[in-house]
Length: 209
Image: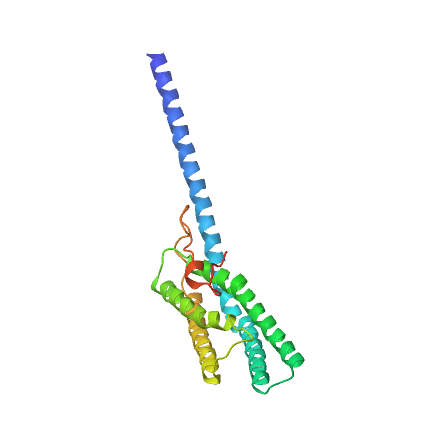
């Protein structure tokens, strides 16, 4: 009988120790998961603020430069400017337009995709995604400019007016996201971020991340 009680006590102790270990492992795992979610939330908020700043500073400045150089070339071409001067102005317009495309591809696209990757989706995220798609339409046309552009002044100005209006709406949407509460959870493991390159590309081909 004594051996039976001793064995039972040892078994109970082992079970209790094992249960405590399982609970400890669960608490540690939950803590790591919560910390990972918190880090993801902070990164997401960082993407939102960085994109908002980009839209209102560097991108706006780059667009002003592009419009100026494209307009100068258009005016020079209409005024029958000598060939060497016209060629130099075309080169300058193409250079700043290429720099704009690079900025949108490497920064705006990258940041917007990560803002859209927020899970679960909310109405504000969906509205932001739609505003983003609409914004890329006029920017794509601006980025495709060439020295052989033969649009009328009215058509040229219309595209720029659309870009300005679409950028204002996109900025408004990103500001609304900046005021949202923390995301409730990070993307699930194995869940891919929805690709936008095939839909919202700037120059007609897929934009790699």
